[in-house]
Image (tube, rainbow, N blue to C red; front, side, top):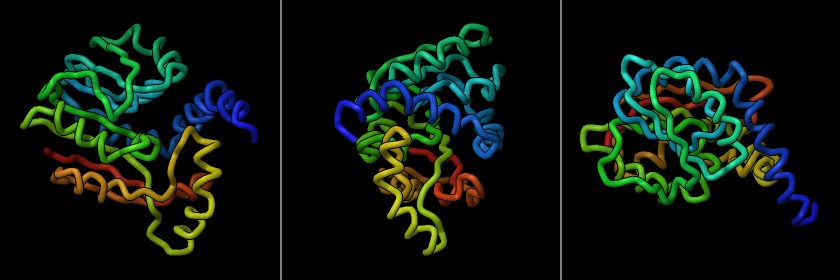
Length: 210
């Protein structure tokens, strides 16, 4: 596919496919378990189309700041922000350069985004910077499969999958990335994706502290 076609696809098609895929029940059940535990001033890195918004506990959240580099995805999120009982601000920016002050957030939420952020190590350094010392990182991610057979398929599919799914990588290890950035994982659960999302490998969710 030519470069101009890839660029058009990334702008006009991929955001809607990612929104539709991430709306599936395989993702919703993890959102339902973890997102209500966010509290205070929340920064959501990889805000996307706002799929986490219905799961925030209005009694715990003061404000949500959603950060995403994709203007199309933020456009899909905007209608969801209008009738919520807490304020939502959307910022178009990358995870690697968060336009927020040090110790800004009580909670940072990242869901299915470390797979697409070009430099997740830098993004995690930024997340540590904006988190208060007493803050928490809530994460829900997919990553390397446990079984060697599925892992081999992930490696084979990785490049094509990335082009089709907004730059998503199938073969990253989110827990290793989080630990390497200096976070302490205080809670973690792991499952595996089943059909039709088997290629996403293992499902990781949990809470980490800086």
